[in-house]
Image (cartoon, rainbow, N blue to C red; front, side):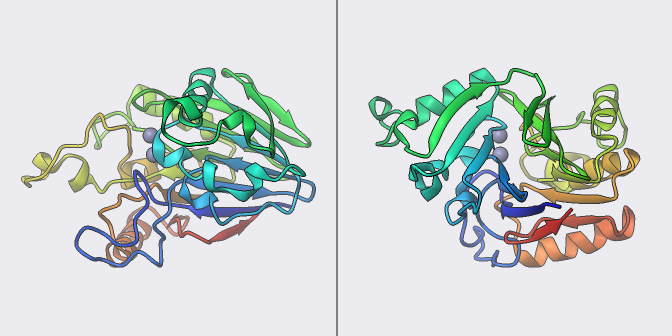
Length: 281
Ligand SMILES: [Zn+2]
Ligand SMILES: [Zn+2]
């Protein structure tokens, strides 16, 4: 049995309120990070600002990075476990993204005053480059996602259940149609019990001109429309679909309303991720 902890559910930038002053304490303002706690080992996917207040009970930790955009790595330098020499943290990810992470956490580069290699809790940094990896009884299968500068999703086989974490991904741009690439993702997440997936935008936010609205077109920004991605997960037969990476412009009132709408259209299996939420599997 494992506990999935949603440590950060916001996309792009940590916020304490939206631009218009809307509250975000129900769904959270911290950026992407998820912990999966088993009895002896902990897997963490990404180190957005949500990781800052988290401490793993287990000293054995695998930190898998999806990519090195700020919202997925900015918490690492402020996470106590990273400096705790009694922890055994192994950082894995695509080679390019690990290089970018090292560049971010390198004194000489001017972003942060501590080198990644000098954080006392981090014992290994290993590229995985598309290969599956074992960590105790867990098996992690990386999948390639569609995102500017690339992004990796992880299908994690835990003791009894399978969890898919698809943080930053954009489906094919036609929101009214399931395309070839969309079908590939559906195939890859088939068999998961829970999928936590990028649902950053409403259809109107993604392509406002299609709805006769003014606003910035977000096609090509690397994120998904909540309704389309939820339908794709439903087509894959997923029983629990958790949409995350909420846009920093969406407040609690909008997200609560949207969750209800999505449940009416797609079904009760869909929910929007709340920071601090736990899912037992
Ligand atoms: Zn992101
Ligand atoms: Zn990103």
